[in-house]
Amino acid sequence: MDGNGRWAKERGKPRSFGHMEGVRAIRPIIDDCFFKYSINTVSLFVFSSENWKRDGDEIKYLFMLLKAFFKSNINELIEKGVRITVSGDLEDKRIPRGVKKVIQEAIEKSSSNKLHTFNILFNYGGRQEILNAVKCVANGVKEKSISIEDIDDDLFSSYLYTGNLPNVDLLIRTSGEQRLSNCILYGLSYAELIFNKVYWPDYNKTILESDLNEFINRKRRYGGVNE
Image 1 (cartoon, rainbow, N blue to C red):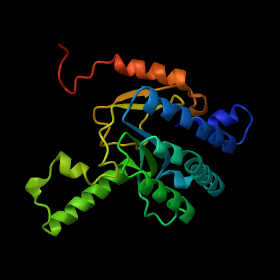
Image 2 (image 1 turned 120 degrees about the vertical axis):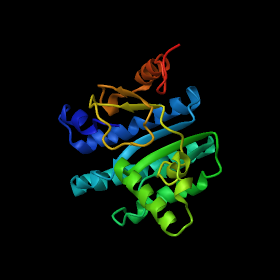
Image 3 (image 1 turned 180 degrees about the vertical axis):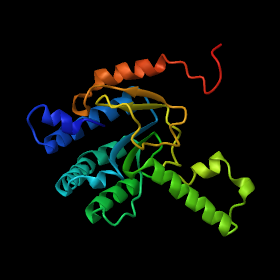
Image 4 (image 1 turned 30 degrees about the vertical axis):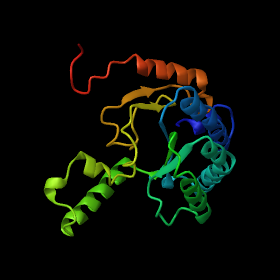
C-alpha cells in the first residue's frame, strides 16, 4: 500500500494525514476482495522490517493507526468468518506491548474461521523470512529431527512466516514504484505483478476491479508453453 506520504505532500499535508487516509482505504478493498470476488486470502504489507529506519514519531503514529484499525474493524470481519493472521517477527522487543496485544487477540479470536484469511505483513522482511527458515531447518538437522533427505519445498515453506498461506497469485503495488521491496520473496515465485500508478489513498473499488480483470486475462504458464 505505497504512496501515502507522497499523496499527502502533493496536497500540502503532513505524512501522517496520508497514512490516516491510507488506513481508510483498506476496508472497502478487502471487503470487495472477500465478499464480492470471493478471494480466499488477502495480504496487506503494513510495516516492513526496514520501516524502523523512519522517524520515531511517524512509527508511533503508524502503530496508533494499526491499533485503531484493529479495534474498529477486526471484530466485524471475524463475525463474517474471516481468519486473521500476521506474518513477521512478532518477538521483536521494539513492538509496543499494546500493539502485540491487539494482534494476538485478533489471531486467537479468529483462529477457527475458515471462510477467508486476512493476512497482515507486520515487521516483515522477505530476506529475513528466508534466513529465519534456513536457521530453523539447519537447527532441525543439527538436532536430528530433520534429515537432509526430507528437505523439500513443503518442509522449507512450513518454516516461513507465510508458511500457513498459499503462494501469491497476484501482487498489486500502488504508487507506480516497480520493485518488490523485500515482499514475500519466496511465495512470489510465479505471481503476476501489477504496478499501479495510483497512490494508495486513491486506490478504490473501480481500480481494484480493473486490476483483477487484467490478472484474469493473463496467461499463466508456470514454465510451460501456451497451447
